[in-house]
Image (cartoon, rainbow, N blue to C red; front, side, top):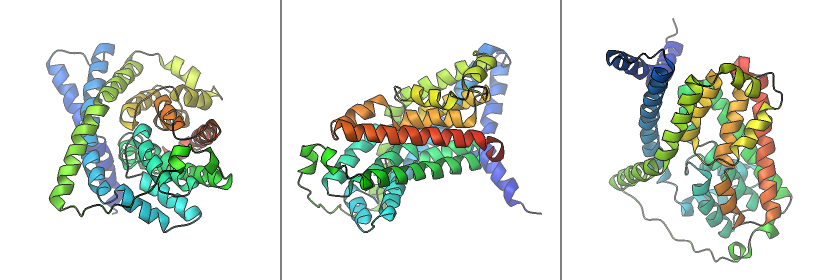
Length: 337
């Protein structure tokens, strides 16, 4: 008998999904006289469970990713990407984006640094698209809620958008649409000091603390919205707007996500609740991608580094890519859930 599927299902449900925690919270609330089958009781259970689950996963993930990231400071990342050419360079930049900051606003300073250092513009844009969209944290969190197939498909498609987007920008020769102060910046190579294991642990711990403080408000707001959707919004409303009967649901979700500012940790509880209420998978993922990749604050920050024509091209590439991914997920939803 093959035990591997059974073991992996246990990991997905009990380790990543923490279903045992949901059951435990239900029993504790019941013992306190709270009816978890009611709207209010269900909302309380959803809020406590999601906050605790995402907090644990968040802290573990930030520590692990930050420890890995300590091996890839900007100088070393630049040297690694400089070894590759063509599409391979875009792919390497996209992969490096998976071990960098969790939101688009945090990725932009690195993008500016790479561009100032003379790396090809298309390569740096592959990094910029990939970093907030398909980091390792999103992979694990998506696995905990949507399953392995959805998580890996999401990451692969996100990497494809990053590589194709960067390649297109490279082919269009948009270098003159980068602001002059970045193009004229002098790049100084400074070798990063070799860190000891203790130094890396301290760095990772500090990253957990600082990132969690920044993420916590968005996490609480996201889980709160998710709890309201999960227990108070009629299923028929969600199905009518974001369900299979609305062919424009993906486009609507992507456009709604752009003005918002959150990261993957604050967005996933909302996506989870929408899916539970009848929204299509691709529609939900399009919303997530738009929020994390095209938030309004990140677009404002990026405008300071690039001119309007290049900024518009970046937004158009990401938006079209996100919409295509959303429709693909909707078409093949029954095969990957």
